[in-house]
Image 1 (cartoon, protein in one colour):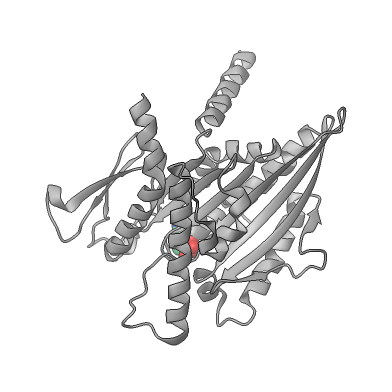
Image 2: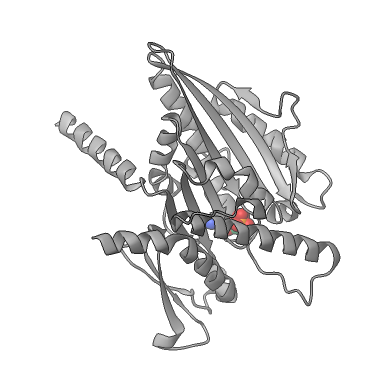
Length: 340
Ligand code: ADP
């Protein structure tokens, strides 16, 4: 019986990996509706079984006020961190097999990007986000394979603010730091977070207006043959996607807003071009897409978590978030459906 269970689990994992063969996945996660707003209604009207999410316009009744978007997966407000990670895990495994993987967190400020990537409380393991769980997995896999493959792991952490790249680890050796275990990476992430706050009014403000990229480089060497494989994992916490009202923003805020808009649309253009298998992929239009060029396209795999804040006041942002996500996602979904 235990054997069958294992077989079943293996088959499930295999299917998941097969399922991830398409290079771009979009998962949508809905943040819980705040209890304090019981007089208001959630803009998320319905979540279907097959990746559909229905959004209701709070100002328009009936069919006209409703729109359905479809993604690879929707995580509702009650989805746990471990459920979210279960659908991410196959990608992490593929890094150890020599693939490049990019995981993005997209959404307006306050929609749950940090919650998904880092989690609300580092000290409570069950609340850990994708970052910590991924790192644990990488080192666990490295241990179980130790007899056949020896792995070297190095990390790098950068921030992109106003199209300027800044190294957050400020290390000497090409800013890539060797690590031995998940705890090493966690320690480095803390250093990175501290450095990120330097020179800004508040970390929260800074982090909502810059992109941060944590990169884990993996090099494996097969003990018997001596052949090597290389993979890398980019964990990207994007700047808040909210549109800043150009009539209100001035000076520094306006500059930041322009850079964020530019780089997020450049990212959307690149992913859409890849999904369409277009012959020209416009990597050079932003620092973000330049930095990630090697990990987007080709054999690389991309996962984007788009975050929805279901509050009434966020309706316009929610629609623009989902339209962005639809643009990078549906082409491939559409093709998959057509082939069925
Ligand atoms: P962002 O990084 O997009 O600015 P945060 O991750 O900081 O947003 O989330 C804003 C607030 O909402 C935080 O207090 C966070 O703990 C809470 N939150 C976000 N997502 C969830 C979730 N899935 N479940 C419970 N609380 C959440």
